[in-house]
Length: 80
Image (cartoon, rainbow, N blue to C red; front, side):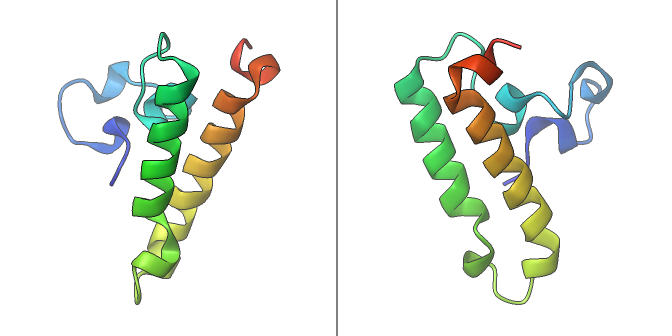
């Protein structure tokens, strides 16, 4: 599972790769319940234990997703 910014389409230049909403795959207007659900789903899909033999490639994506979830679940950081 890759964030939408990593797809090779014509909208890549418009997408902010470091935007936590984009990384997690939710809209900025998403409610906290939807954000938690997307974080949980992404964490399970990107967990290195789920990808034996490919841990080195998946770990940076998992860590980026985890950081984005921390930002989105912290109201102070989310508003920045």
